[in-house]
Length: 96
Image 1 (cartoon, rainbow, N blue to C red):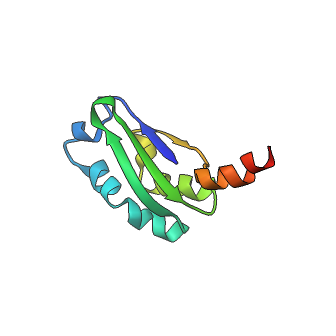
Image 2 (cartoon, rainbow, N blue to C red):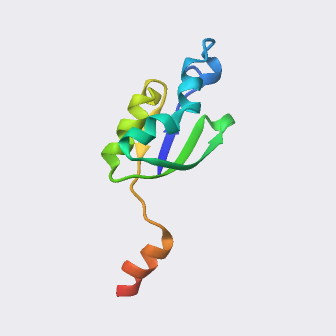
């Protein structure tokens, strides 16, 4: 899971050229060469936050996608490796 967090001054809505918005819209094009699949994304516009669920070989590949899309130039980017809850139940809770 990837969380993006920015302030109102660096928001893509404040960028008159729309360069960052165009890069974000084409995120799948940046993901494909790294073997990353974007499952879906969510936005909280008033809070200047976004979240993306991705499937990737590792966190480094995910970081590369968001770096290539220049998301790091206007966001703090947090990558959190997560697993589906069913897998957690089986592999973690199943041992308890």
